[in-house]
Length: 314
Ligand SMILES: Cc1cc2nc3c(=O)[nH]c(=O)nc-3n(C[C@H](O)[C@H](O)[C@H](O)COP(=O)(O)O)c2cc1C
Image 1: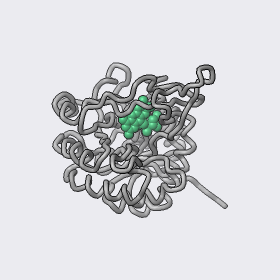
Image 2: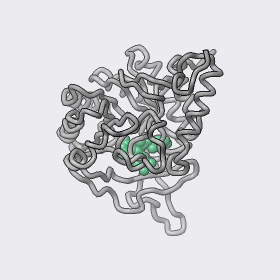
Image 3: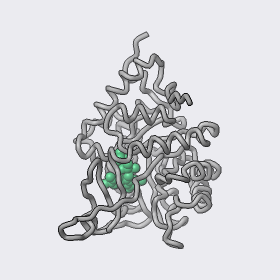
């Protein structure tokens, strides 16, 4: 029986029905409705809000974003209006959004994360939140996501603050520790994992001999990080997430449908697009068109049947 694009891409993520597995990545799609003019939100599966902190943050001084070969570096510094203003000014828009809206939480102490989690849990129209654990911890300056023990403590505490909201832990691109971090997040109650956040990186202007970012270092995103993310998703899926029945959302350098298809074969049940939106706001439409065609050619009834289906013979 022929499928419409909607049928074959339809996805159930944690019991949340999505019209397709494409989500707009945190920090690249505003709070709720800023992209309405540029991206047809009624065609995407959902969007993740920029990360919200307990207090309002101005973020880092400029330059905060620079282009690199194969991507971009950003050190926005979590500029956002804070939990109270988000709840007052943005939360009411979510019920009218034409796509699912997931929250995103950042913080520098467990108490910070809990305060924002409680706000999102009160916001009924938000079915799930991402926990951005790539934030320095006020206690020791390390990121929660650098250490499985600290991560477990954070996730367990936030889990309790989200009785009616699914918890997705967004992991850093931990080259040698992704399975340990994934297992820690899952043991502490993560319902899903997002893999992975930006890669810490740096660029220097050789004429002025100064760092290109005022913050000196930043996070690398875009096509350059894509193969790194494919490997991390494959390792986390085969190393623990598949057996635990915990879905993975892939993110990093998706610019074309083949990138999304790679994530799905590596083990991702859904994927996010970020950097590519800045260059081409119509990228979601293009990616979804290609993905529909590919899924049909693979002769499956649903894109979900391809999750983790990379064929490795060795
Ligand atoms: C300008 C910018 C701002 C971002 N802000 C956030 C954020 O607030 N929270 C977060 O979890 N990730 C943030 N990210 C990371 C993206 O969500 C995504 O993980 C990363 O960019 C990799 O995906 P991409 O290559 O498709 O952009 C940001 C990325 C960019 C480029």
